[in-house]
Image (cartoon, rainbow, N blue to C red; front, side, top):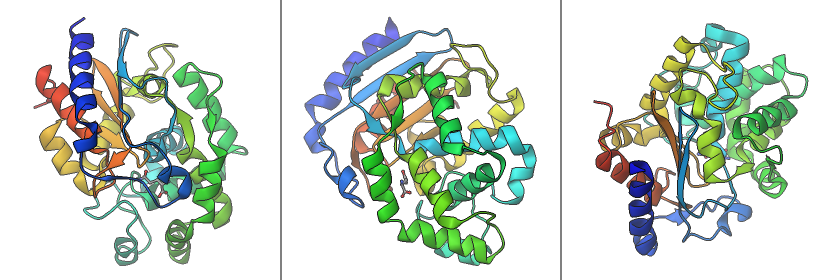
Length: 306
Ligand code: GLN
């Protein structure tokens, strides 16, 4: 009841000033540039299986970089600690699509939540799965509880057509022998993951395992070991919002992951997953209204972890 009341208050507050938030809708591909900026949704999924929500929760959006958490989860299931030979665990301090650091650090991306890190993790998955896209969709449909979850093909194809920077990262990694498969084939998989479409309630539900010691709340199936789940949350805390992870830690105080579709997922361990969505992005590629909403939420319910 308390959670619903707070969501209602925040939704009302944010919706009354949506036009005033700084930033622009992602414009690097036409399919994202046409999304209406004045939208907001917020949802909570508790470890007891309760759902609370407000705003435009029926609207679908592409999860973009939030998918990097799922990619890492599937890769950890298959590789365990071996994965860290190919991708690091440190905050990047540079933009999510930066190329320069990758050159300095000889083709090993700083962490799995920037583009290069997620692309190399996709490459690792591609080596172990015969149908990675199918496997990811099956996983997301099961976790979200919606069998109709799909990839927005318009967005995915548009990303592929405008792939130069991500392709450059993959080729650079290949030049340092940190790539195993055909670059374009792996990129198709990566863009498909980014273009998975769902609503805010489904997003909160999909990541319920992160708040629940690695166990999916609805099915009670283990997704990650308790230890892997703690480690993943730690990495989200230090790197989930790219080079703005420090600001997020300061303002919101929980592990989180953002995407250029305007979604942010945050985790209160042992209690719930909270998802927000609003498409206007700040200069770091994080949702402006989403950050504000999460900060309010953390303040009103005293959720800051420290
Ligand atoms: N699809 C986007 C890209 O590869 C994802 C980036 C993001 O959400 N930050 O550029």
